[in-house]
Length: 338
Image (tube, rainbow, N blue to C red; front, side, top):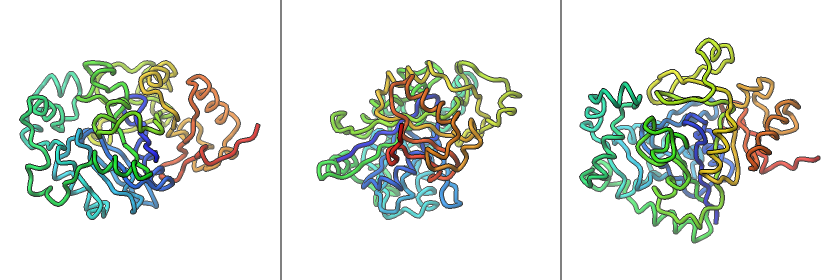
């Protein structure tokens, strides 16, 4: 039995899609479950192709993995069907009967709210408005839509059964720790708890069954929208460092700052990970690009990783060195000498 939970350590955009797609290919889980909603985009690059996913799990690259959307998640039907078509995964996608559905009226409601759009920096995808309806118990769920009839299942039951028979499950969290409604930089946060505990609760599985929590950090910090960003760099400095990025969902430019050990320590405290993944490592150390073995990294790059691991008291097990899912140094599979 193996249950791995993947969560973001900063403000989203950490590369969770890359990490989860790699785990899907290498660990071959029987089930991968996506939490969160369509305001979070996960990018997967594999074998020369690129996908930007907003609701399907990034494990789709493993064609034997069943793909599920958690009961605590929110989907939009057109987005789901489009991603199923783009990934060729129709026969293995399942949605919980209680998964919430965002309707056009939710999008309109949110985009007409000046405070949300201009002050908070909402993505305007209708997620917050749908969450309000959910709390008021008037939100329609997957069971209310004929278009979803062929995809309905009991996700919590399926996940627990898979674990009970000794299978592997990956839960894919969205956004990042400091966008948590409760533990983030309120009010500049999202509409749900994005920590490991929140992610688990959306699926319906006991914390006692969790084998690993992988906390994903990027080699630097980025943030879209309003809210504090410690150590934020000027636009010119971001360009000079080659850290220019845009949000997957909105296309807005991401603000950037150097890796923050203080934020990372708090993320570790809130999530208690067993492992750490670091992505975009090649943006910090260009000579690391495309490397897939620890010994092939330059000395200064290995030293940086070791210092981060020591400071956080958590092993760094996955190091992303390029865009492709397989551009990864997997320390779980390497024997490193003294």
